Amino acid sequence: MIKPKVYIVSYYGHNVEITLTSVAPEREITEIPDPVQDWIINAICEDYRSGEFTSDECKQIIEGNMYTHYAGTWRILELNFGVMENVILWINNHYPDESLTEELFVKYFGICDGKHFYGKWEKTFNKNFLDMINYFRNSGNKGQLFCNMALEQINKYKIRENKV
Image (cartoon, rainbow, N blue to C red; front, side, top):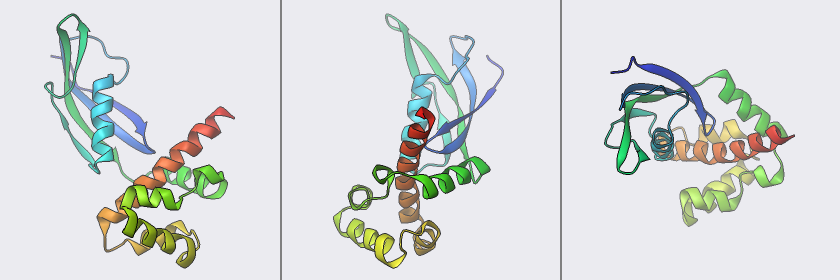
């Protein structure tokens, strides 16, 4: 049995703490294995903030029908400077194709709500991020969808900035 190993990685603008508690067969891990990364990214996209992954859920073919199995826990490290810095940089420097568009609102909220919320974003709040967050204060699920949508665009912005 391996000694639990903790990693801090970034997915969709979130700093995520991953603790690997089991790797079978035992081997040295230098980076987060793809099945673990995929499992956590899917969980984040489904609005989970933390969780466990088991060796049945996270396994990787080594050769033939032999697998490496991974188990452990993960959690999003809530509000931190890096996330806030990315949001502010995006707000002040994003390109038009990195904006929150009506198409994105419809993609995340459906046609009716998407068009309604886009109208609030565009006209009522004049694209003010904090005002829009405040608008969703009584609807945490929709507020989280708004943040996930923004993180999709922030990620596009970060990719472009890293290429410069």
